[in-house]
Image (cartoon, rainbow, N blue to C red; front, side):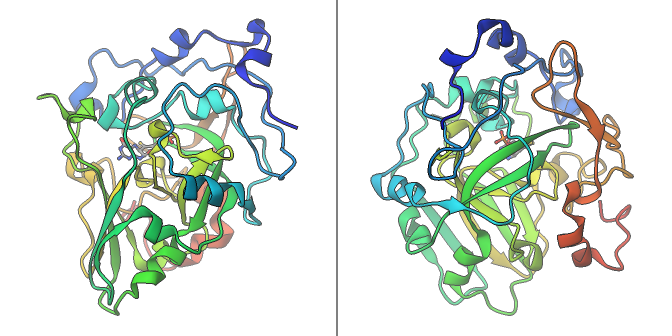
Length: 344
Ligand code: MTE
């Protein structure tokens, strides 16, 4: 069974895209507060996805962007299996996952990435691997993924802006890729970098950029090697849409969404804690760890609760936020003895 595509959904159930895509919620209000509305987005309250015969969530409707994914990747995705670490919760509709995005390289409104990344060229794609590892160099995306079995992981994604959604990602535990490069004992952290390409990424092509580029994120080595940390290459049974970070991105489900860096071109094994984009932008507001924590509020967003998307005119779908986004049993031990108010 396939999920309902837009054509199948009665129009009464759909909030026009123009309504929800124009709502703004900015992370870095410092640079962009004027005109930013903190009101919640109105998203179509539509039936969730059902499972296909392969057991995966699949979307087969019109996607609205050019899919540059290579044949080898499509084959690998077609062979993906449902993973055992998935959340047992209804997933957000495809239109929400791909229509309500944070990807500043393509603009700061939630609808900008879908609009501006339609023709984002993601093939050929190479990743530079550097630093404290036995194997370093610049590798084709195919080389990174070769021989790896993909799985679907249904994860809660919790943004620091106090909204969340459940997404059926397709990917591989990051550890499987990192192991290929045989990190050395000096490697205490992994630093990731997003593509810089102002010609394709209009958000990088303006004097008034909200953040500095390249977008940089980092994980401690044990976080990077944790089973839950996913290198995602697809969603909804298809290759990663451009607005979600094609062709490869991180998904770290117990941390705020900004740790889940998109369109990765650089991986560096390093002895020093990387300085990340949001720390550089405002270190008082955004920490390196960024573990979801209902007890430590952001200056503009209480983190005690969240709105689960899609919301509707009649329901904000508010629910309490769980420590580590509900993944505490699996990851709390990584932070034993640490003061999580200090290391937020
Ligand atoms: N990666 C890059 N390169 N640029 C970004 O602006 N935004 C982050 C993260 N990764 C961002 C990024 C934020 S704030 C969130 S919440 C998630 O991507 C959103 O992922 P999604 O659009 O797939 O839901």
